[in-house]
Length: 166
Image 1 (cartoon, helix red, strand yellow):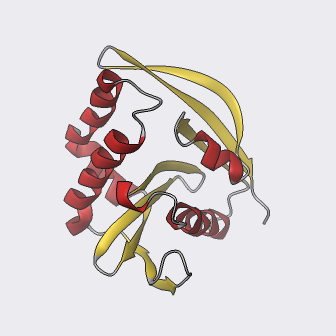
Image 2 (cartoon, one colour):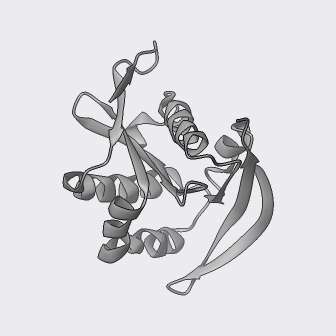
């Protein structure tokens, strides 16, 4: 476990995800999208996006096949990120009540350190409209706009990449 402190987020700790975290991660996923993405996506789009929480196999695979890092304050999970195949940021969500407090920056640093540790030279991800400014501030560059049809709704995101300094 890695522990660090800053004036904005005291006692933020990082640890690997465990199976017992699954329900809390799913709740955080739905709550964050619902609360944070409403400026960029319609209620129908958000409903289609969050419905993926019902894909039990996908969530179990996340915990078994990816490197998942949890950020927490005391016993509260305030964010999580996952690294798939050492070079793809698959999940990256910050609790709706901890937005703008430095959690995302510090969690991103942890996931990038893990990618570098695994020998990755380039990170990629499919980034929502809402998260795009954050990822650009971390050095990601948009490669292409993508229109994903999910449950009859078009969800726009962007394929983005970042060259890592190893």
